[in-house]
Image (cartoon, rainbow over all chains, first blue to last red; front, side):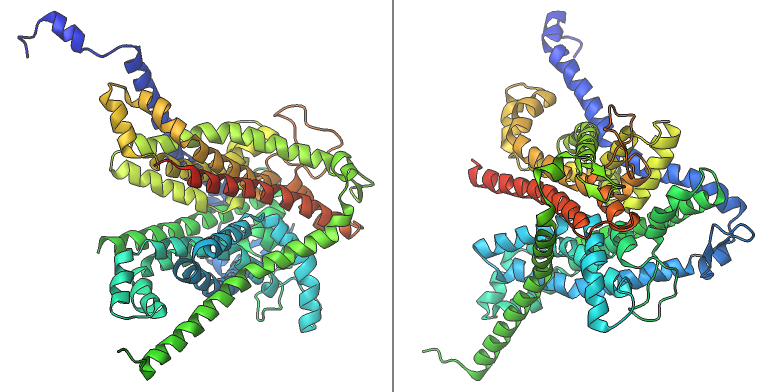
Length: 307
Length: 289
């Protein structure tokens, strides 16, 4: 290209104002673009740095995971056992999934495969509205509507328990699972359904034998993300679970969840104290568990998609 | 010519059974919301009045209105939007218009999914560690709003990305062929054609932000303040936290009061959601391509 004369080279040079603006915009957009990564790392670093001093110096890992005694405010002998808190979270989330999984998958199948036209739009909007209700309102519903209903219905002294929180949490997780599951069903190519229908299959046979197997990974991901949602929910569980430390043996026991413990206690701790740092340690645990759940959901979708 | 066999009939019965069962499940999922809304309106309705919205709480929050909480929520949401909309739109532009298919883009998408999945109380811890302590904003509107912004960023990114990707590729190619730079194409073609979709996402984000409680509890929202916030470094009351406080922390609250607060909060959130949905439906009907 050395034969090109200088005038021609200048004419081809497009480094005018628009070119510089374009470059600048590209840089700014890139910075905004990687903000997601910066923030997720930032969350880990900031929570880690507040929790880490406690983890390395004071934490007895064995006691932490196996002791049901959570007495962080005890003057003489504070103990930090989260077994009961984990049991609280697990029992509430577990019950929530028992409520939410069948109903959300059922609703997703109905909306995606059976409902048509206006009915479908209305149902979708209602599910979206369900997802929009703030968690503190759900908590309030558990506290003031569900509580007396449970007391009266089951003749128990306290209505703030696993049953209450699990039911509320199920209703909260259901719309998310329904939406994701419906997307997974819709992603199954129309040709699959048409092929099966051409063979004389009824709608239900199509769904059962063709659509559901094809959408399996997406449905599993939907359930996983629902579990993640239930696991991380804070305000509703704090208000509806009774918030007392217990290894639950029945749905009518009050329990306390990991998330709710942080929400209830962080305000009373002094910055830098052991109690403050152990709450951040719980935060690290929550962060890691949800991270694993989300990662698994992502891998499930991708892994099967590749096949 | 074709006769229905018993097998056909059996299949048809099974089909009908499942169809009914699934419909019942769908309705059972939706029914509780309608019941709950009805109860909220029934019990909270009588409390509502212009006075309730426009006066301050009195008698240790057992009487009076919710004005400071309403104004506080408006503050928190506005400041959060100022932070999250530019960053979120930039992130979506990057993902939709620039990002090559590589590990960084995959990591970015994964980071956004995770950001959306992190529990709200963990966002609160992050807000305390980063904004309140490290950046020394103290417990303030700024710290609380930034925490909310981080938390709701994925909502903006996902909604914006979807509406950017809905602009047909041919529009961009036509513009490039005229010699426009990538940025000129984005500014003159891509953004004008997707701005309404982006707005829909922003409205959705407003509704999410207004209802969040855990992230603001320790970063800037106060149980009770006798004055309205004057700037971003003040603390503030907020609707969501106010509902938590009057329903669990304050003794001797008349039964109807928290219902009134809950009703106003849910009405705000659902109204914005409905706007967003109506807007989206309208846009879908109007789309030219």
